[in-house]
Length: 144
Image (cartoon, rainbow, N blue to C red):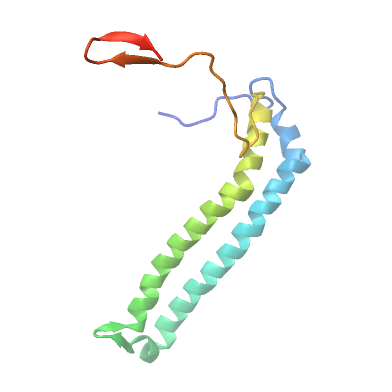
């Protein structure tokens, strides 16, 4: 099964063209916001990983120091690599929910030509009649 997008490269569903969206200030701001998070997070993680590799290669005595029982500093640093990976993923998902997703959703809906409600705006509905209830003992439908 192919996951290739079969939409035209110039329009999607009667909305704006992809090129117009890419050139828009809103899309460029979204890209800047993404870069403001991704680049520093990547640099910090790679620096942390490089520190681990360098300490493992050149500070063998320090990395061999026992912390608790047979667990040494190298094991702790190795496990912290996994912890930091999951922490970055969690922080990114929270950041994306607040900063990327609302803008990306608005751009997508505008591009597709669909109408959407703004996020965090509760919608109210009113009903004129109560929903039907079923009396399971008599198997008849009644209105409240």
